[in-house]
Length: 258
Length: 236
Image (cartoon, rainbow over all chains, first blue to last red; front, side):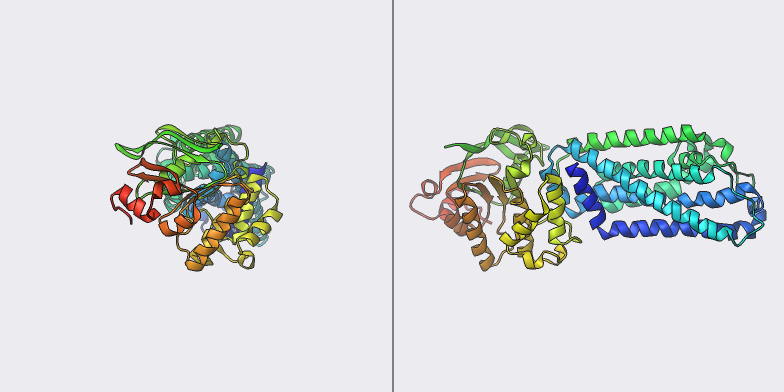
């Protein structure tokens, strides 16, 4: 409990973490606030408009866009220790590294959940405001809000854990963050587009699967029926978390602390 | 005399290079022991092995007969200053210590106490990155005594201190030692060490080359003369 309290203090004392939360809120709110305008004005491109439920659901699904910040906070919680040299104080205070890592992973999961729940809620709220300008729009599906919040909680926890694992493996904070951004924004979408059968098992595909969307846009080559069912996607994403957590603990036990 | 710290045939290798080479030595409880050696002699590596930050390749490094990692609540047994890093620059000195205090289950009131002891109370809420090097060293010392430990391990605590700071450090270490604490301190400032320590350990190229009470190692000369003679004039 002491270590968790210490990790909590590290989380809330560092202003950069608050900046990331604000960025996540803005990104999510921007995503849902602007998507109705884009969808309504590019009906031909997407193949559907706001008079269809799948379009309205896709607006609210954008509320989950802040997940990149959950992984960045996880990276900063771990790699930041090496960047600022605080790893020395941390491991002197609690020399059993497995225990330190377990608490850090726990705090990263909590931080990821908080970031995702707050930013997703803000995104949904912005979506409601954005959709209020289109009174003739279809109603969203009954499960979209619940599914999106569950996806936010699970992805926040798992991505926070993956962030800590990346920070343990790549102790250079900037390199770890840039690597995560390149993966999530470039490599993952490319894999998803080129090999959808494999891509649906990758983080972005799993998060999309967890929201149980029913969207088919042949114009964009996007069909959510290709994704895993919500429960399977949740379990696979959690499995990612377990594998990355185990890797982080195993790695931290072997390396000297500089 | 009780042995507080012991090194048993300690080896730490990086590839084929032995940074610490079969070091066997003991530090007596309740005394200030100077840990001396030229740059690159293996002092810092030895101390890192002692506190569990680096794993020995072979041999042992123990405090009161236990590995650091096996100590129950280590901050209450051992306080460590390895360098002026170890604290987050964007946080205040007080916030940095509160993070450590929370991890060790130490009440926040103790943070104010130690900041007072190292004369940093006025700068407690200032960001650490705005501290001078001397203030950072004092903050590191505050962190080391946070758990009121029996043993202090200090790696170059006088680095960056001006003469007044060095005089303050000497007085501070003496006051800690008078309470029966064991202090193992590494330093290059041999004249200062001569005024401060009771015993010395001298290593060169990872090997122990002298050990014992300061007077015995110095003989008729000064500590600096003895050190230069023993290390072949490699003082840096």
